[in-house]
Image (cartoon, rainbow, N blue to C red; front, side):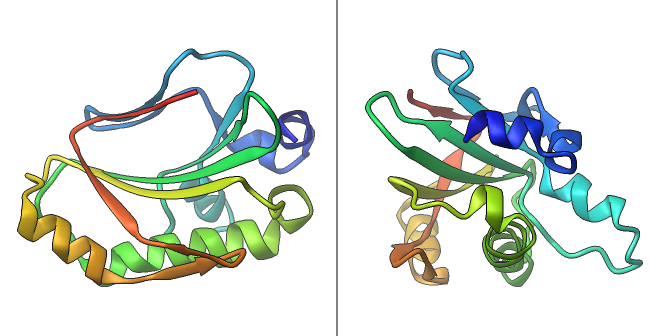
Length: 158
């Protein structure tokens, strides 16, 4: 699947080396050819629609050591000020349009795990964590998902 993404004539234009923005990063532990990072924001900007749909900063497809793939969606924000409706729209657009519609022949496979992360400078306390767990439940491939808040930087294990 990683090679299929890298060889797709459209998706290959939106592969990026790192998932970082304004000093906040989601890094992959033990970097090798077992993952690919896509930039859906750049894809939607390239369409020049005038009203660019909100989408996450990174979509990471990771090959599992034993079998199958994991899907990780990451939104990076270097401020405590964010709009929850816009945050929800970013994940919905990425899951429902980018993965399940526009690139379903490549990306819409049965993933072992699907994770949604909001990586921010926002201080994660019990109240913030409770807010996120109650914010919105997403359903994707019969999996119930919530956005998980992470303080500052995220490391994705192999």
